[in-house]
Image (cartoon, rainbow, N blue to C red; front, side):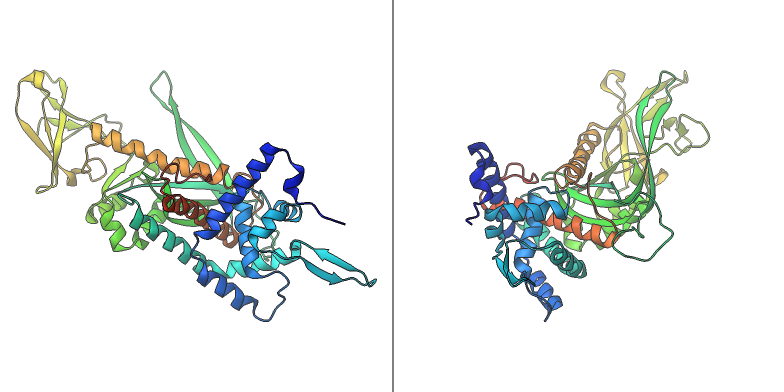
Amino acid sequence: MRILPQIMIFDQTQNEEILGDLERLKNVIDNIPDGKLIHKLNEIRGKGRNDWPVLPMWHALLGGIVFQHRSDAELLRELSRNSQLRDLCGFEPKTEKQKDGTYKVFVAPTASAFSRFFKNLKECQNELNEVFEKLVKYMYENLDGFGEYLALDGKAIQSFATNYNDNKKEDGRRDTDANWGTKKYTTSVNKKGEIVTNKVTWFGYRVHLIVDAKYELPIAYKITPASNSEKTEAKEILKTMDKERLEKCLYLMADKGYDDTNIIEYLKKKGITPIIDICNKWKDGEETKQYKDTDIVYTYDGKVYYVNDDVKQIKLRYLGYDKSSDSLRYGFYPQFNDKRVFRISCDTDKRIFVTVARDSKKWVREYKKRTSVERVNGRIDRDYKFEDHTIRGLKKLNMYITISFIAMLSMAKSKIEANNMDHLAALIS
């Protein structure tokens, strides 16, 4: 019986779609520096069963990401019916003799074979990390301005499990690593001027992610249980970044979840301007505070006013940062015909007074770039199917997130090599 490739029974439109997927997969495969990873996988397999070689299995896993399959079972079904995908991955049919003396031809791996491969791949996280780092290094070397503007955020990922399990024994079915996380979001301001918040709770994990804000590509990340502090993990990620990358960074943008004096101080010491939204931590109910023994007052979010003899507050405009005195310069708007200049030391409150004034047009302009990391988080959900996955366990999730970022960066590399700089982060050719 002659087996027709899947693509032959589709109409022309579907043919083009599949060929597009195959082209994307080939671009990913051709641009991954995975030599050490494949060598390690072959070492782990050793003298074990080699019915389905390591390299085609690795390519098939990448195919599952590019083809946007939700589960391994979906990928195996695709391999079974799509001969072109099998050819691209490098699979060859395997014939096995059955108990009744007949022979059966297998064109794609079994679920148990994939399970063994995944088990081995989980032991190669260091090699996967090395592949990721090589691709990030390529971006630094080949993209103009890559790494100058960084954006930081946390991303909630629910576990496929729904709650804690009293049985802590790992068996591939229960999740013994996940826990509950909570995050509050500001949704609106009501008629009374009160801030309305929305609290989101999930059982699972959090991806702590730093991306390049211009090209929307990942630079550094860490996966933790959901309850881990965003601020604490952000400090750890920043400390793991090498000196060269920190020196290249000019600005780092983040939402108010990262409003922390230690983070701001660390960035300033490294010559990085923090563009981080601020929380109102004033507990005394005051709307303004006086700056030393002067006629200057300021708000929790960095607005500065001059109080005149009539006790009227006059909004001052930002005139720039004075590096020599680590202070911000303020003055009157032209209509007041007053050329006095006031300096406020950043040591007054290092959260409020940062090197770019919070109420300046420049701060607003730079902060808008933070949305880049939100778009990457959206791609994690939408393109890489983490909004509807079947993953349990920190180790497996870490592996899949790393591979997804590898696929994203490899696709970007293929576009750069082809001199196509459009939509580098998108999972399209």
